[in-house]
Image 1 (tube, rainbow, N blue to C red):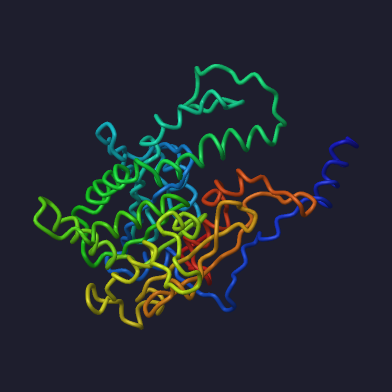
Image 2: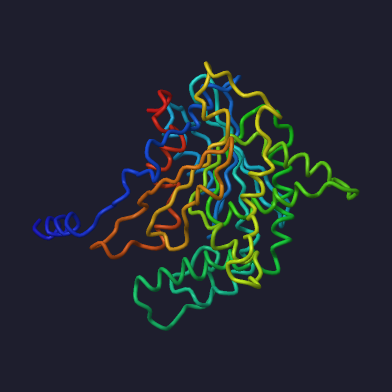
Length: 376
């Protein structure tokens, strides 16, 4: 009995979660959540596009993320697993699911791009101490590693970081082409005035924004080019709520820049997020905004919500001066995805991969600030 008690006391004194509950970097932060859009949208139906980040993901990620977000609503989650929209080999899989919410519903479409990079990452399986599911059957790694180092090497270095390297290299155009096809499939038949919510993690954000930016410039003689450009424009015009977890655009964007000829004497090029925000048309030029008496003012524009665990080595906050503009409100939210030990260490794997597992993140995405009455 004494040992568990001592361990509990040690944990209380040595470990903490400084950003649980979540903290806002800007004073007086208010923003809508999924529940607000369901409540104030005609027909009470909202479309959500989920895009995972780097590291291996599969259909179970989609199911668990939808469950986590849906549980924050006063929703009756269907007992059956979400239907699968099987993709052709080498394509991005789209997994649909619908969650009832009040008098309406939230319609999720999860884009699973991870299998595209698996064959390349399997070249590193020989280096894993504890073999991941995609590395089963590979020879064991004989040298002994310290426990924490082994986990970081297995997950971050052999499974997660390679996704970013693969995307920034030779395969970038191929991955964007498959994301382009997935966007066309996921948005086909969408009502132009239906609000769209995008929830994207780490590298997934970069892939999506790069792809949308390229699609906008496709207008031309090539077959399907105009259709792709129009689909991208409609997607941006519908976008009312953009959630970014584990944002990596500041560091990944460095790979899109050349060396400055004169340091400090050149304007920095826009990244793909800036470009798509610039091309997004306000509701007055596209779909009508809800009347002021029917919805919070924030719903009429675009709310960009960025979640960051300060101990996540791979993530960055968003600079408001770069991304905020008329009709676009940017909010940075600080969260703790795992415990900090002795004020010196937080598991770097959990810090990066557990955003959508974090109940604070799910609640704020779903319920907004202040919390919607539709939430539990």
